[in-house]
Length: 261
Image 1: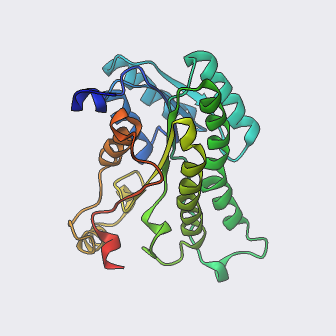
Image 2: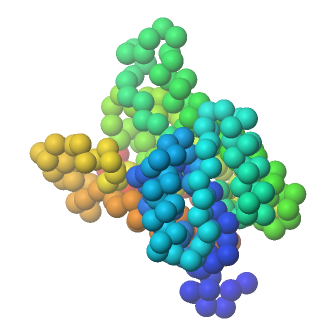
């Protein structure tokens, strides 16, 4: 048990995996973890982008930082990456399931094979579940407990935009999976929570026309999009000892957007 707030919030010496940790919200989380003293590995497919982040972190912070090639839609790829992480770091203290894709379109717009729907579900829901399966087994067997943080979306709770049916379905499923897993693994001192962001500044938001962005901001009670580092701060809290009593929670972080729906 910690004695001070700074001690409780510190991640010094903790070993963390962040899937999709080289871009957008994932980068905000990776950065926040590094600033709090964690050792962080980015699991991703884009090695070039991830290694640029790893090199930048190494230049700024004292922790250990690495990249592992991982495709969350493939169990063998996930297992190879997790095994590699354990071999290099020794143990896993924190897993952040952030990797995902945004598939547009509604049911009646899909092709008959519904490939866009299944691709989104396989990445945004099943990808995180694959990682949880592998990492929770390790955490249970290691006997030290751990933290699982799933990045979902307010789209899993409300209809924040039309024609995001596959994406919203995946995120809603991931929210409920978070609660189910939290109940299952609490006995092993593993805490499982989710963060459900709303519209957040990212590479995607840079391409939104200025007038459209103004309209989006006007529909958010606090008047702006979230910054990726703000989501990172929430993740750093959930990864810390200070959050030991928090499990099965879905923390909506959307500037109050969901309050209107």
